[in-house]
Amino acid sequence: MCGIVGGIGKADFRNFVISGLKKLDYRGYDSAGIAYLLDGEITVVKTAGTVEMLDEKVSAFQGASMAIGHTRWATHGDPSEVNAHPQWSEHKLVYLVHNGVIENFRALKTRLKARGYRFLSKTDTEIIADLLEFHFESNGRIFLKALEETMDDLEGSYALAIMVSGDERLYFAKKGSPLLLGSGDGAAFLASDCVPMMGITKRFVDLNDGDYGYLEPERIALFNSGRQIRPVFSERKIEDFDYDLRGYPHFMLKEIEEEPQVLSRLVDNYFDPETGDYLFDKSMLRAIREADEIIFLACGTSHYASLFGVSFMEFMGKPARSYVASEWAYHPVCLSKRPLYILISQSGETADLIACQKIINSEGRPNLAVVNVKDSSLARRATYFCLVYAGLEVAVAATKSYIAQVGLLALLLGALTGSSSPVRHIEGLIGGINDIIARKGEIENLAEKVYQSRDAFFVGRGDSFKAALECSLKLKEISYIHAEAYPGGEIKHGPIALIEENTPVVGLISDGATALPLRNNIEELSSRKAATYIVAPASLSAKGDAFVTKDIKPYLQSLLNVVFGQYLAYYVSLKKGLPIDKPRNLAKSVTVE
Ligand code: M6R
Image 1 (cartoon, rainbow, N blue to C red):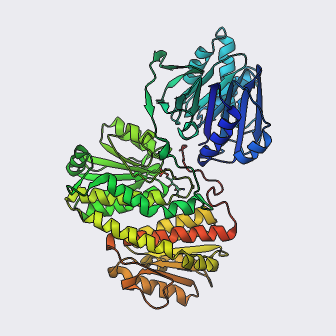
Image 2: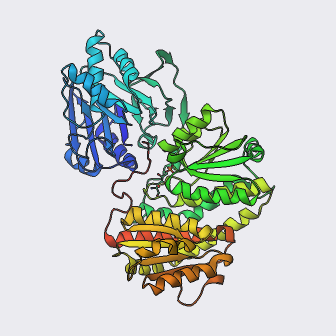
Image 3: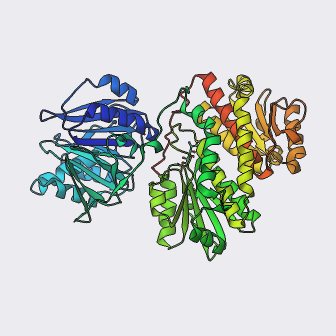
């Protein structure tokens, strides 16, 4: 994964790199580093820690003419200072930062070792620096050519920003990992996404795989496959990138509480109340109608959102399935003749999903990307795309984007069936979420009972099992409590053996048909001394329930269970004093397979 930034020309590069890396640390935050060119000399500072720690370590400097920076999510080599980027070449000709994974690095390392190169780090990145140096020394010292030759050698993914001793250009290359260029006033920039460059420039160039070249203060030289190409500029609006906590202690809390507003925005963007028409691309709706099967692909929270998509499609009589992207990519099963794929991803950059999209595109099949980032890789390569308008989501734990994804799928159902009811039902959902926000103190009290547990279980049936999956993912990722989700009826087929005295079990009720059997399942667990907590809508609630939600339309009801679970995870993590927005070992955008 990892985030990279770089720039050349007239700018405050200390500030640009450090603040840019802070904005990119959703891509990983286990070590960080900077290299800058000042008075003809390249200085490198690295830390086996966060960007905040790097900030403390880098002395004040001004007048640098070029800089690159990196925040890392370790793939090869532990998160130590020596493995942090920038990495440099044997003779300190090349300094570079890298996002991606070099698959053939062992073979390349052996080749380089045979030529006398020695390696300081355990990274797959250091070999790129050495390869560049090797080609440069072998080809008559033409760096652009060395870059082309190195790209030919590399298998895997990379976004690279490269500084070369004695060279006044900032080089770059991209394959598989995201990279954007920005053109400013007397300076040029690059970064893994546009956020570090917002406010400095409005003009961006989205790079394609195989693009490479160099930046000069007033010039972008772009190449692909040996030919120079003209950069295509696009604009981004600064208001789309709200990085302010707005008084909240954590982004996760802020983002949960933005959910009502996110749903309203979603409706505003996809429904015209004047005409009663949905505003989806008509050819996309036609393609979905004509498909004989809908295949959903996604990872993590987005996968759990896609489970609602399956139910919605089945409701309208359309066969549908959902697969975890990393599984489907290696077993791309499709039993229908005219499938349409729906790829769901908050970031639009998830490598496992991009791997699926490559397969789908190579077969010429239609695919719809449901994303939260307009210019993301998935959106750009999809046949159709829909934005979920959740706004920038900073916390690693996805919250508002999940609600927006399911909201979008509900609106899509409305558009496909010609019914405006989902719009009204989403208004009900907004009311239900606002009610939970107003009563979050009750969930905080419940967290007090749970936060010291080693294990926790979420149990549901039907839609509330889908909610249970998401609640358990939220709890485990930010509180580090081992959490599992089971369908109520399955518990006694094995998992019940795990129940000990006081093991917390949260029973999630969302519909009348399964309420009673689920209560029976929870009762069975209470009899084994589990500490059980039931969450139910008002009309299905009973005395002693731990939390009661508003009654809303049954097919959206279990989303209120999820909002409950989001708060529970938040407060448990808070009580444990954990880094809520940046849990250990995780990154917001998972750009390695
Ligand atoms: O950006 P994506 O929606 O494709 O990300 C998928 C998962 O990596 C993501 O949902 C992950 O599970 C989150 N940490 C969940 O909170």
